[in-house]
View 1 (cartoon, rainbow, N blue to C red):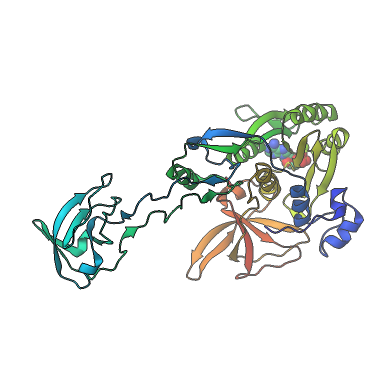
View 2: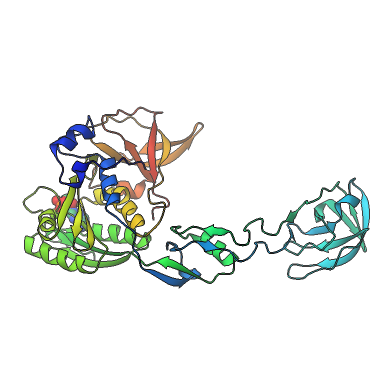
Length: 427
Ligand code: AMP
Ligand code: MG
């Protein structure tokens, strides 16, 4: 996702100057998504501490230092096929017959290939000295100890060269790489059993609202279940964070101050839901201003207008809105890039793709993040819209494959190309 430089005004509280210059279509006192993201990312630095861990536990972790290979991979020229190793100069035309002089399975080493002979060879076995090509067995005919090669052969055919994957002394992965299963395999392929990674990011969460009840309990009139807890903690766990959950917090200033103090004491980031609007029962922003600093608050987006960002002691703070879809969307747009940057990863912005719209949409002043599903027709992929886009309709996020972005003031017609953030890869 692109983001411009943060306006000086963003770093302080939102000001009239920011609104006027940020975006012609923005509502009063809102900053653009790009400005907000830019400001958030500029406030974050990667954790410094590292730890040495076994590669089997390294999925999702971030490499703290570059990894160099001390070996070639493959370590030797080897056969890419089950077949026959030959001297290509002896097989320039189809139909040449050669005596089979040796048999080389994977894991064994042959001897020098004598002129006029072929070696029976299997995938992964070292190509014997003297041979410079392998012919796949389907193109050969074996009778007794003689093989007829029914193909003209070129030097290098079906040979995997030493070092063609990884060259000795080369850097295979840079510091800041997030380790996926393919990197776990790559690290194993150079023989390394342990890697130095950044320590896990410590994230504290709490969930404000007198109406909240944990699932498994009966609801009284006016109560709802604390679904945000499971969405948010799940997203954090998928992002590889160490989560400390402070649970449900009542809507009082004292309770909010108390939990914020405790949450910030040992966290890199405090992430909350609810209580950041302008209602009389919204205490998160006030508590943040009392204990630390609020540097950014209202964003020109839907869902998710109120996102409070700041600092308490050594912890960064992000207060997400209360509405369940807003939590999900603002986590993807703001919290995840912040977290990934703090984890020390080089690539921390989400993948933004393009998708053809399969729906009509009347744009509004705010930037919208619509829940869409990817479908296919004869022209390829297109986005189908979930019919109910309310910020409380969590089914929309469950139904969808990703978010289609509608920029402020844009009307969307069927066939228009939209920016699209797939959920895949985010958790
Ligand atoms: P708030 O931002 O606190 O005014 O909350 C906005 C809306 O989100 C209200 O309808 C809340 O009931 C709802 N909400 C707040 N917190 C949660 C939560 N943890 N789980 C589900 N819904 C919530
Ligand atoms: Mg509330």
